[in-house]
Image (cartoon, rainbow, N blue to C red; front, side, top):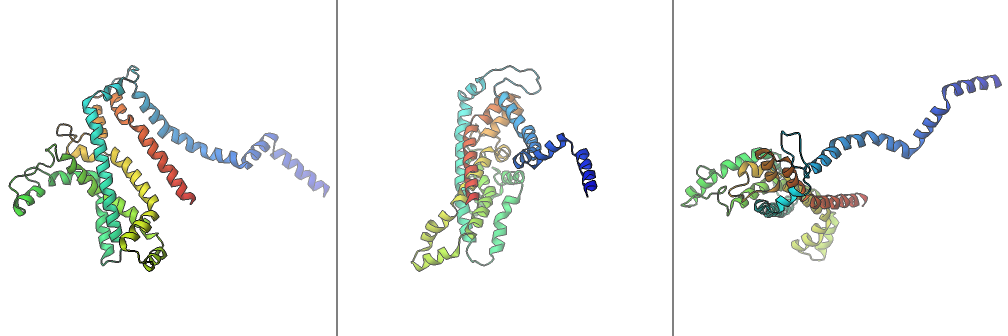
Length: 316
C-alpha cells in the first residue's frame, strides 16, 4: 500500500508543478474566472463600440473633411457655428415637432388599437395580422409608396380628393411648407404604430382577469377599468415603448430623406438629414458629427432611465 501511495505521489508532483497549481487555484476562484470569461467580450465591445464612439467625439472638435487626411483641432468651433446658424436652429424646432408629434400620435393610436384587439371580437386574428403588416414593410419601400401617394398632380390621394370628394384644387402635400411636416409625420405614424400596438397588446394580455371581474362587481364602467386597471398595469410597457420609439424616431432619416430631403425651405429638416447633407453634400465630417452629438446628453439620460426601468422591472 505504501509503495502504491509513493508512486501516485511521484506522478502527482511530476504532473502538477507549483506554477500550474496556482493557475488551477485561480480558475477555481469564481470571480476571477468570471472576469476571464468576460474579457473577450470586453475587447469586442471596446473595438466595435468604444473606439468608433471616441473617434466620433474627437472628429467633432476638428475641421475634418472627407477625403483629406490632415485636420486641425478647432475646439468648440463646430458647436458654436451650429448654435449661431439659423438653419440649425430651425432644425432643432423641426426635430422636436417631428419627434413629439410622431411619438405622441403613435402612442395614442397604439393604445386604441391594442384595446380594441384585446376584446373578444370576430376575426380578431385577421385584424391583428392586418394591423401589424405595416411594421414588416421596409421603411424605404413605405417612403417610396407614400411619395407616389402624395404626388402633387398624379398622386392617388389628390386624384381621389378631386374625383370623389369634389375638391377643385390639388393639395401640395410635399411642397407646401404649412402642411409638409404633417404629411411626413403621417407616414411615420402609419409605419410605427404597429410596434406600439404589439407591445401594448402583449402587456394587456398579462393583466389578471380577476382585477376586471372585481371591478365589474364594484360597478366600474369600461372607461374606469381602462384608466384604473389597464393603464397602471402596463405603465412599464408604455414607458419602455415610448422611450425606445423616441430614440428611434429622432434618429431615423429615411422618411424625410426620401419624401422631402428636408425641404421645402428646410420645413422638414431634422438632425439626421442635416448631418447627412453636411457629410455628403459639403464633405464637412467634423461639423456633421457635431450635429449628431450636440443633443447626445439628452439621449444618454433617456437610455439611463430606460435601463434603470428595465432592470427594476426584471427584479420585480
